[in-house]
Image (cartoon, rainbow, N blue to C red; front, side, top):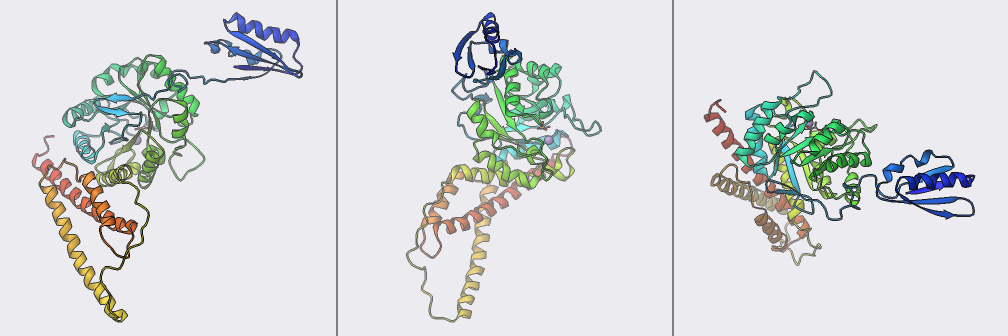
Amino acid sequence: MIVVMRPTATQEEVDGVRRTVEENGLEAFLSVGEERTVIGVVGSDLERVAHLGTLDGVEQVIRISSPYKLASSEHQVERTRVRVNGVELGLGQELVVMAGPCAVESRDQLMETARSVKREGARVLRGGAFKPRTSPYSFQGLGLPALELLHEAHDTYGLPVISEIVDPADVPTFERHVDIIQVGARNMANFVLLKAVGQSRRPVLLKRGLSATIEEWLLAAEYILSAGNPNVILCERGIRTFETATRNTLDLSAVPVLRSRTHLPIVVDPSHGTGHRSLVGPMAMAGAAVGADGLIIEVHPDPANARSDGDQSLSFEEFGALMDELRRLQFVRAPEDERTPATTAAPIASDGIEEVRDRIDDLDARLGEMVQERAALALEVQRRRAPEAHGHDVRRERALLERAATGTAGPMSPVELTMVFDALLRASRSVQRRHARSVIEAEAASAGTGR
Ligand code: PEP
Ligand code: MN
């Protein structure tokens, strides 16, 4: 900490500052310049002299180190890795996608969602039990029964579950039923709650407050860490700005800023961050690209009839398509330099334009049949595996794309060929996914309403 004295400060005022520093067990180093005196303050507990700025003759106090200690990367250089039931967040691990409904509404809704998001590759199931709604008349969540359903979903599908806590007295109940405790944006500065979850042995996902600066957010994390819980995950979920086109303004620059200031894992919530279904995918991709350790995404079997946050919830199909995009981002290498193709495939005779067009029409008809034949085979693959099994093999797809991009000669560049095969793969997966869903729905129907 550096204390800058006013140019008019007297010797007594300088001595007053030095005395206060030393009386508090810290050291003061004076640097007397021609115009003014500057005092360096060193020691482990600078909070004790936080009031130096109010002493006579002091112009300003400059903090050099961050006010948060345990959360700071000055304090801990290695990045924290949070482990929950075999899932690891942080330290360059694979992006962890958490997904599920905003609120748990019923057993069917939760189990159906758990099954679907697991199949698509989500690693953690979310579901609100106690909903801190802006209006007291909005659906407040099912409470304890919802936590019990999350517990059941965990046991059935083997996914760790996350849910939001609102009352410090509920910590033991949450510890019994969930794997990660969420502190919501509206409670980021509820210091009683932060201390309570700080005493828990469960990891805590701490959302950024609606109007919290990054420093305030890290100080909130410091409450949890200093109470003894080292497993804190930060979640950027958008902040209040003047913009009304989105529900919040998703501050993705917070991710690299946090990366430079803290060792804690960082998750991005594009659902609350945007408030609109169509914006969730693009901002999820952006969050992944900017280096988040995880994403948390709202998914609902029937978003139009969701009891909360339907507008920003993805359907199963939309979530599946997003997961495909995320997989593509991680596993498929950038196409190689565009190469000039050797020659055209088949010599084109000196036909007139109409003849060439006729040949194109013929070819399109054959291509249409081949594309359908390919989809029928993909469907056969899906029929031969359980509906939960993931619809495709990423490694095989990558190999296919690489072969497709380089294996033929013609006017299309590798990038253009990749575009064509990419579209084919996407359409085939959509066929497989539709089939898997119909099997799941048929099973649910034949199981009756007993679930
Ligand atoms: C939630 O995740 O369900 C939620 C209420 O989020 P936030 O606290 O970010 O508004
Ligand atoms: Mn929500």
